[in-house]
Image 1 (spheres, helix red, strand yellow):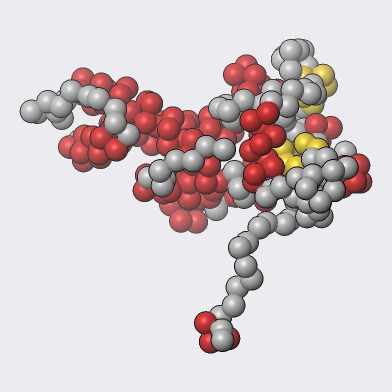
Image 2: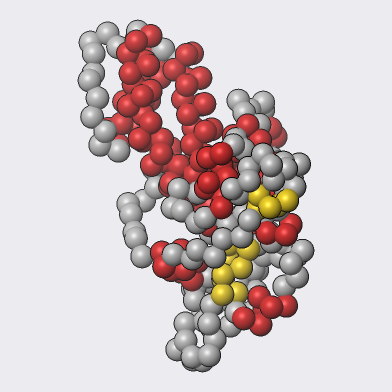
Length: 261
């Protein structure tokens, strides 16, 4: 598994905003947004290419990067020196080189700085993914809203990816990095019944990859819409059931300090 430095303040703030955008609570805290959910999702050829086969640049990465770029582009147009200062801080944090001018607050230089920010914004999008991917209830909501966004598209519009109106073709491509990521997220257990799937206690228990929102219900094969179940739970889950695993690992049960011996 991969490990990294702690996520940046920028990424943690962005993760909170993206969580609210997915859950539908953004307006309550921040007011009107620059994009709505469907605009940020951008259902097009690239969307379906990502949704059809698991890749490390997921729909959530793309969704997040669209918001980040829109925010920074708005900041570029209206932020003046404040934009330059904030952008320089981000570029320095991620080690991205840029030319600093003595009088940087010009339209051309702001355009240049935004272009240099592109890589940083992609890195931040990945950090946001790492924060939110562990929240399977949020991933279920993201999957359901994603399915809603293309539910009326006919297969003739995207014949390489759709086999019916609002229904994607099924991919059986399960790369090893995906299996490892899902098993790690589930702590080696079935997401529904919590049975151990590491093979240490029962070699017959094999992890199976399940679509949280089933393909028949408009689900995608994006990593955000996948979980690990045992064979029994996977078989029992209905093709029209969007149930998500409810167990998460905690190191120990919470105990209030006043109760500790």
